[in-house]
Length: 104
Image (cartoon, rainbow, N blue to C red; front, side, top):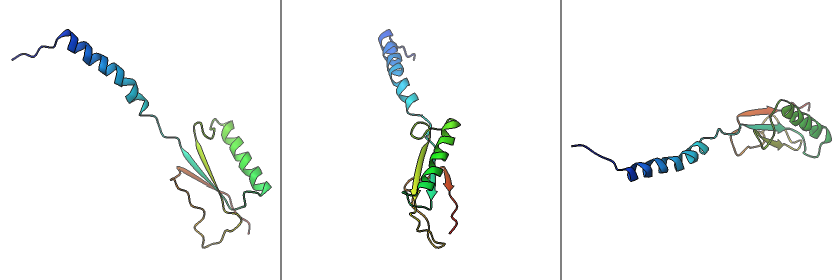
């Protein structure tokens, strides 16, 4: 038994594959890396803001821009850091974590 396919069926199958191909390619974009920055100071601390600005500028200098190809989540502890605290919580799991040291 032989199976034959007509010209219309062949063109319909090729046309359907051509339409769905770009949709499948767009669905496989890589995930944007997430970086969690844990600051033990209040958000209003001017020195801590200076450190954070320097970090963000250094990241941009090497090609990483927040919101474009990396996601930076900053958490501020507000100066309430103790040895027993678990630190600020992050909703999403970051790929990398940057913690600033404290001198209390």
